[in-house]
Length: 149
Image (cartoon, rainbow, N blue to C red):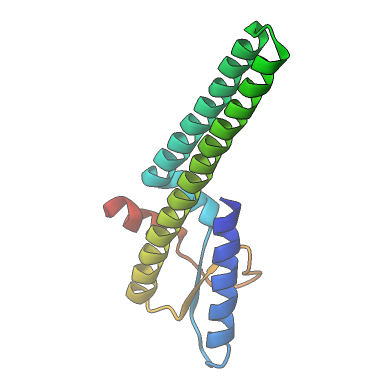
């Protein structure tokens, strides 16, 4: 989820630069963490990723038990090699799942933010971490938009 924040901040910085030349720019901002906490699809993605992480941990616990039951160094070495290969494949699948879910959620939030930006006649939507003073908080409107999809 840290990648999502970073991407939002980079996108926000680009919007600030592009709207900085307008005299009366109206800027909205969102609390991305609050959006994620209140968006059911994001919560479901977190649960799915957590379940896969627990599955990977359980896999390692099971493999450790199997390793302890081996009696020769050769069997242990072969087992370690096989387990490392399987673990790396499972870990890579978990990373891909996480990246995919994060990108999917970010895309949905961006789409909702764009729709709210248009409906509220805003020039830009930034992260609340970028705004020090001013702007319009549209976090709740984005959450409503996401829940309505």
